[in-house]
Image (cartoon, rainbow, N blue to C red; front, side, top):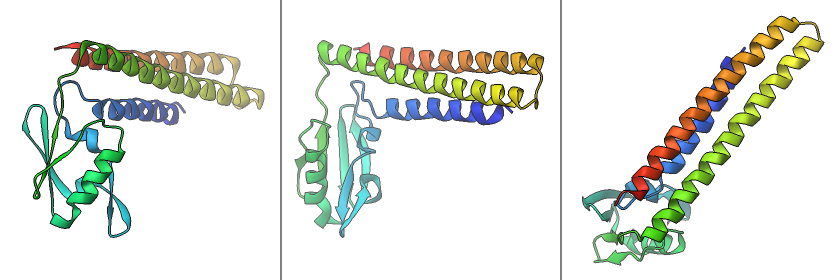
Length: 181
């Protein structure tokens, strides 16, 4: 009975961890390019599918397209994105040089991480409410007893607490990573 709600909470946590992987913390991380799409023969295609992305230095990403004709499209896609980094094009590859994060920017990013964490907690609490409502309906329909209802509500609460602790831990870890110079 609890399995489906646990899976939903797990998906909320996974979603948060995925969002965190796209947040850079001083070092170049290829995941910051995950959401960038390039116009490839009229189709918006993920950048990873049209180029090789490597990290030659801690603050540099090197993007080598498989087709030289894509350099302009990749450059345009990066410029239009919310990365805030100007690509350097040498005709064969594109370099993205990530500047050192200022203390203000780090604090701003840490706040953003906390906000994303709060949103994940809200999603988990909504799943708890959904589960409790479903159990109450089963109780009204005499499918489960009052004791079973209380027991299920307790189990859902324990599950919720467990996932909220995991979210808090993920937020704390990412904040620490961002604030470490």
